[in-house]
Amino acid sequence: MRKLIAGNWKMNGTSADLPQLTELADSHPNPAVDMVICGPATLLSRMAATGLSVGGEDCHTKVSGAYTGDISAQMIKDTGADYVITGHSERRIDHGETDALVAAKTEAGWAADLHVILCIGETEAQYRAGDTLDILRSQMDGSIPDAATAATTTVAYEPVWAIGTGLTPTPDEIADVHAALRAYLSNRFGEDGAEMRLLYGGSVKASNAAEIFALDNVDGALVGGASLKAADFSPIVTALENSL
Ligand code: 13P
Image 1 (cartoon, protein in one colour):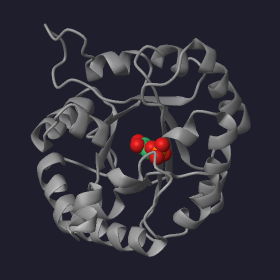
Image 2 (cartoon, helix red, strand yellow; image 1 turned 90 degrees about the horizontal axis):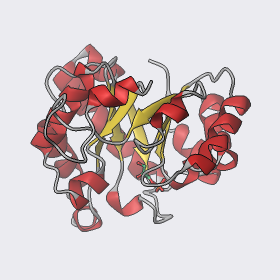
Image 3 (cartoon, protein in one colour; image 1 turned 60 degrees about the horizontal axis):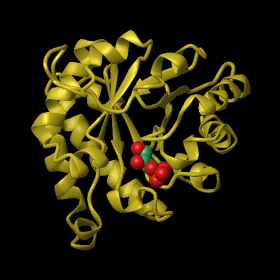
Image 4 (cartoon, protein in one colour; image 1 turned 180 degrees about the horizontal axis):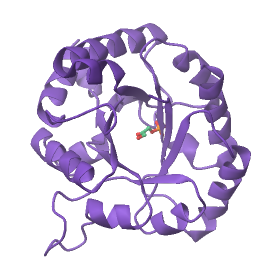
């Protein structure tokens, strides 16, 4: 499985930001890793037209129907996208998404032939209480469907307290968590679990990327703020390439 560097633009980006993607594509015409930018639904078809791999940030569980304001995985695929994020903490927390809903959205993504980047992560209170691994295992139990394979699914570990805060776990903490996630995935999914990509996310930037990518069981990153500008994201892509 190739390593994966993924950006998540969240609720950012209008037409004026599209040149960032052209700049990124021009800087990495032939990346040695998979590179994707997940963006707002309003921009996806224009993002895909740049030739970059793009993804949605969320999807509905159904293909179509009376769900005002929602976007289906098929609609995301139709824009030219190849990926979708499910279970981001900003969906779990701000929109009350349960593990069961995240599992259903993940299956919807697969059904539309999208590769799913499925997010898990503990809150600061859970981290402080020493509950990180219990929380992550229970999120994986509930939100990763049994049919997950390495080809269809990537798991992103994003500690909620590290998102947009400039805080990160120590390298040892990331390595310990990723080792535990790998053990869980291998145990549950066998060979596919051993191969399934594990991303770290939360305040990844050019200055800490190389150190994080050097860790065992870190197969790339999911990057928020530092993915908005090509000048910030490009060195992170290069750091992942250099880790190979
Ligand atoms: P930041 O990189 O801005 O901390 O965001 C991480 C994230 O939530 C990516 O999905």
